[in-house]
Image (tube, rainbow, N blue to C red):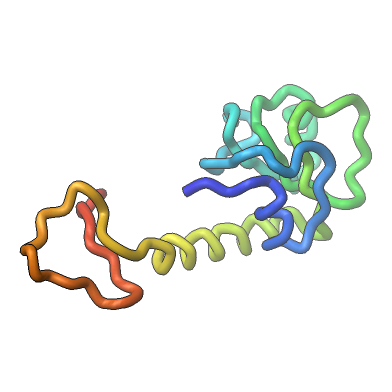
Length: 125
């Protein structure tokens, strides 16, 4: 599933510094993040990674002062740890209810119908 930095900031009631249209498709530790990743900084001992991470976006405190330029888009919030937890809950709800319709290829009888709000597709682990 993919979200923009702006959509994530809206869910968290945060503000964006940087490109709000950047697409995020995974979560990662700040020290291991790659392009397309969202990370968060809540512990000061990880601050050096803020300046070297390859994450596309980082959730940080509104109070966090920057000591040097940061390449990633920043989502400023009151409590990064709490907001990251909220984001995990939001993602879980979205994945549970976000898929509707029939995934292709699908093999249904010619007269088959699928009810409103349902999903039929491959089972993936």
